[in-house]
Picture 1 (cartoon, rainbow, N blue to C red):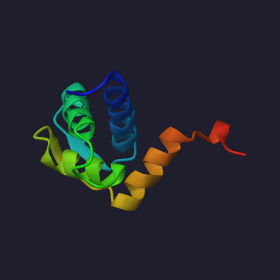
Picture 2: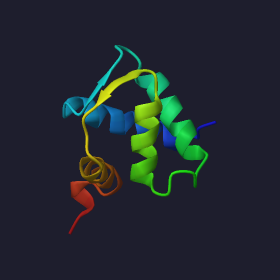
Picture 3: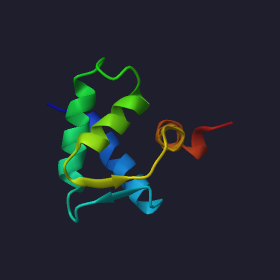
Picture 4: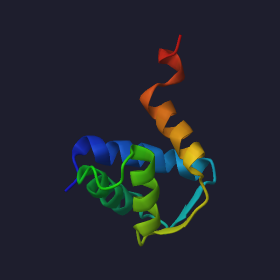
Length: 89
């Protein structure tokens, strides 16, 4: 089961991936993907890192048709969510 935080985080990440053209999903499936990935992340430890966990969960999610993002691109997007430009020195 995913927490509200992980589901919200995943929703934002999916929106960023979509706007950057780094993922293809079934139309209208953002909520299902957020729940799936959030639940995978909530299980913790089985992936080793957040980026690896997100990558593996997105690849395993039936609603994700294609993931084009590299681990480095995902890391950048995740860092942007964690540390928005307005918070950076």
